[in-house]
Image (cartoon, rainbow, N blue to C red; front, top):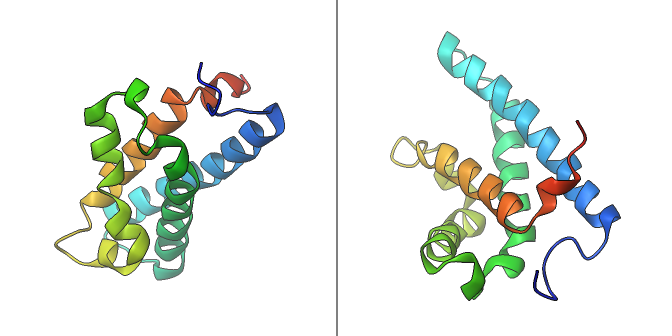
Length: 120
């Protein structure tokens, strides 16, 4: 594990996992609403905002990390456009990227070993 690897401390890892838990709950609401043909703009905006926020928090720990794999880092970094303009994720052309961003954040938590602190 590299010196800059998350978690530098368990408290930080738990804080990230708490944020991730909130995102998971919001993603379930988003998915249920989508399947039922409902639109809950408040929940959708909250989900995207928190997801992009966690992406941003993980970004400096992922960028330029050769040990995580060049393809993974490149894929993770491509989501910066959505940090710069989260509203893009609400457009029909980009809404499919929400699931990709969700997966990229989850993989970042895995690759940085934050998930080793998940509670059963």
